[in-house]
Image (cartoon, rainbow, N blue to C red; front, side, top):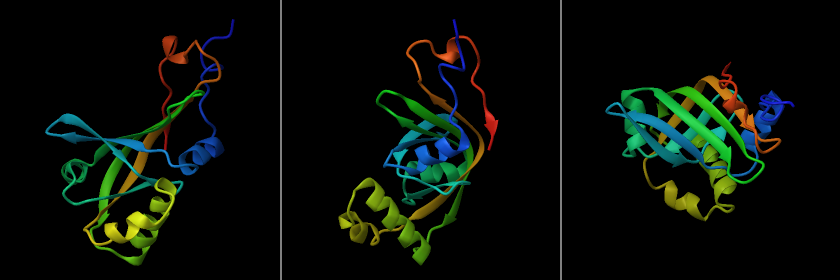
Length: 161
């Protein structure tokens, strides 16, 4: 009987990139607040080397990244067959001023997540915090059969980013 990685193989780089860029998956961003995990759903953009998040300066996850740059991001597919990408990353606030590149990024995200630009004009009236999350290491997971799950028999495999 085949058990383990053949039933839950990782995504290859092309599959991982397609998974992270196709569709409008909401990511879960984990940061640290006073040593405690703080998780927030976020829109993101993946450029192949970093995850980009447009936050608000008063959002708790933005404050958390300013204090401690360690972050964890999960992007998953919540219907079968399940897929997940886990990312340990370092976060950095790269800008808190609207510039053309951030307007364009916000426009792309709005189209990706909302499907139209109705939200964009309202959003541009408020402050922003542009966050870059640089992966330190990542792992991926997908179901090809159900069960077994490789994590019943082996530890997760992490790959340098």
